[in-house]
Amino acid sequence: MTTNKTKRPEITKSIRPKTQIIDVRDEYNEIKSFPITGELPLTIYVNKKEVVTLMTLGHYPESLVIGYLRNQGFISSLYDLDSVQVDWDTNSAAVKTVSSINDFDNKLTHKVVTSGCGQGTTFGGIWDDLQKKNLMTKRIKQSSIYKILKLLHDKNEIYRLSGAVHGCAICDKDQIIDFIEDVGRHNAVDAIAGNMWLDDIKSDNKIFYTTGRLTSEMVIKVAQMNIPYLISRSGITEMGLNIAKETGVTLIGRAKGRHFLAYHGSENIDFDAKPDPRPDNSSDIWKRR
Image (cartoon, rainbow, N blue to C red; front, side, top):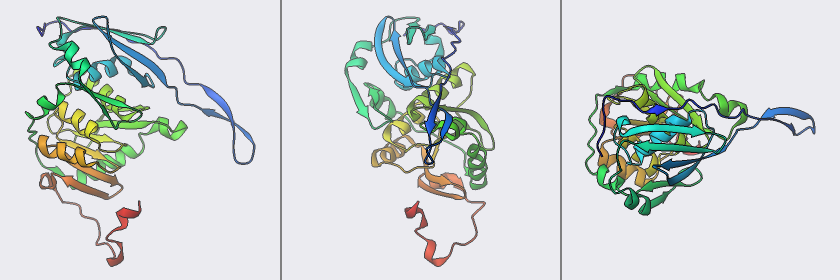
C-alpha cells in the first residue's frame, strides 16, 4: 500500500445517541431510575466493501474503526487512510484508503473466531506478523504496578453506573494516558489503538490494562500495538500465554490491590515493594478470588 505521510486522513467527530434512563424495580418492589448501557451496531466499510459489524457504546467510534483496522493488520499507518466517516443515522463507518489494501479479499476470507466478548474475529495474516515480534522493554517497578492499579480503581465510571462494560487503559509507569470503556474489551483496546495513532502516543515501555481475561485475542492486539506489558485483574488462557512467550509480552494477571501473578516476563519486574509476609495458611488465597 502506498501512503502519503504528509496528509492526515479526514475524520468525522460523530456524537453517539444519548444513553437511556429506564425505570426498574429493586428487591423491595420499588421503582428506581437507572441508566442502561447503550449498545449500538457499527458496520465498517472499507473502500465500499463490508468488513464487520461491531457492537459498541460508540463513545469513540472513529478511533475504534482506526484501531480495529490497525490491530487486524489491514493498515500499517494512520497515513494509509484517506478518510473515516461515521454516520449514526445509518450506523455505519465509511473508510477510504489512500490506495488498495494488499490481499484485502484474502484477509476477509481467512478469519478465526476468537473467545472475545460476544464473538471476536481475527483475520488472515496476523499469525505471520506475530512471528516477527520480539518486544524489548525496560524493567518495570512493582511499586509502579501498584500505583497504576490504584489509579485505575476510580476509572470504571460506566461500569459503576450501569455495569455490562469492560475498561481498558494505556499507562506509563506512574500515570494513565488513555482510558476507554466499551461493551467488549476488544472494542476498548481497538479504540485506544486508534487514539494512539491520532494523538501520536508511542508504545515504548508502555503498560496496557484490561478488566477482561488475557485471551489470545487480547495478547495479539497488544503485541500488534508493540506494547510490552499487559496487565489484567482476571486470569489468562493457555494460548494467550503461548503468544506472550512468542512475542515477548510481559503478562500479568489476577492484578488487584497489592496482589498479582506474573505468568510471563517476571524478569522484567523490579520487586521493590513486596507486601508484608503472608500468613502460612494464605499461600493459595488467590485461588479463592
